[in-house]
Length: 160
Image (tube, rainbow, N blue to C red; front, side):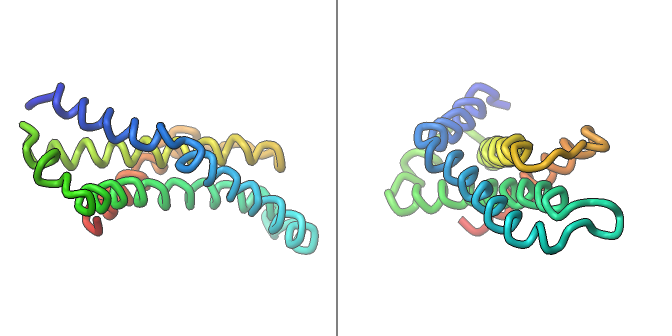
């Protein structure tokens, strides 16, 4: 297996979204903070606590992080393929690489996972400004985040 080629494709895909970090990482964070400010301020005070002693913002924070992971893992892989098709780079750049199809899928999925996890982690960290919460099982959180990012990255590859 050509690990260097796999790493190179992964790095290229990560650099693609890191070079425009204000659009790929900053915009989702601002969007999530607006959700917290608007829905947390407007609905949070009216809803109060749920039956299990969880406030509305404590309920909202992990959902927004999960939404960020899923949405941006999907968006990274699908938009990358669509952009390559549109610019005519699919045959020239991607199919000419000395990589097997499984390696190409692995590199695209890993880059989509990286973007999804970065977005989800930044939303979760920023939500600490609005609400105090604890993570009951960090291992389960990391595992679920990785699985969500992988699934939606693969779905993005299928639709791209």
